[in-house]
Amino acid sequence: MPIEPDTKNWTWVLEDRCPECGFDGRTVTFDEVPGLVRANAAAWPAELARDDVRERPDDATWSPLEYGAHVRDVHRVMAGRLELMLAEDAPRFPNWDQDATAVEDRYGEQDSAVVAEELLAAADRTAAAFAAVRDDQVDRPGLRSDGSAFTVESLARYYLHDPVHHLADVRRPRA
Image (cartoon, rainbow, N blue to C red; front, side, top):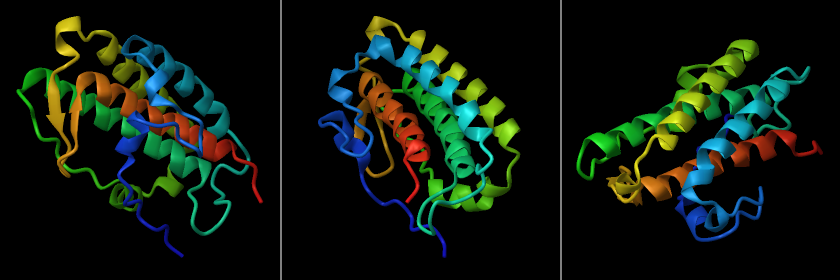
């Protein structure tokens, strides 16, 4: 059975605590994001080295490998969005269909060791990009394809939720 596409608008994590993973974007400062991204990324290689890395806990949930590949790509996409926000005035982000990408790129068939290396590299690149943002750039705007508006600062907190949430997903006890 294929995974149901995630159609939720997760921007609410900027205003409230996520009941599933505990992330509270209201408590995270912009300056903390790079370190938190790197700390989260450092936990992924162990998850991607698990014996059950390719196993889905149920038909509706990705395997740790699929989550890892997704998180790697989230880092890459968010780095691109940050670059756009710093280079253009109020850019509209290209749409990214994460579910189509998972299927097209065959997340579940990728080499977990390669995914771990690529995830670490992408996280480091994105963390460095956010760390390099000047104080006069944190309020620069950008728009998601659905019209959700972000500043560089709110994009950083929104982005951080994704790897935090998915690390909790892969660490959740199996039924």
